Length: 75
Image 1 (cartoon, rainbow, N blue to C red):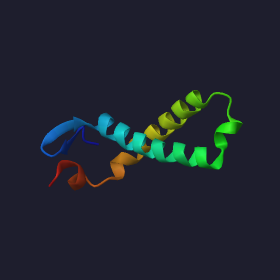
Image 2 (image 1 turned 30 degrees about the vertical axis):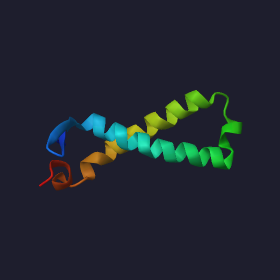
Image 3 (image 1 turned 90 degrees about the horizontal axis):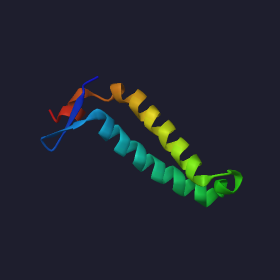
Image 4 (image 1 turned 120 degrees about the horizontal axis):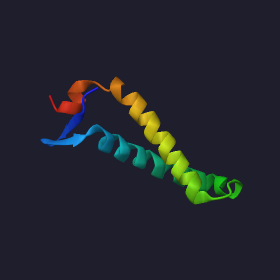
């Protein structure tokens, strides 16, 4: 896995890019959980949100080597 990703000619750490992607997925998952009423079933919604974000970040980080290198370097 490469350590940096080129975004518009600016090199960013892979962890930052995967974190932003995970945060976007988390926003969608959180909105879906609110719509389905899942927050009524959890004791502390803030801790639940944090746990979901960490799980999503881990999943995105684990799947990031599968992304073609040309997408990440802008070639």
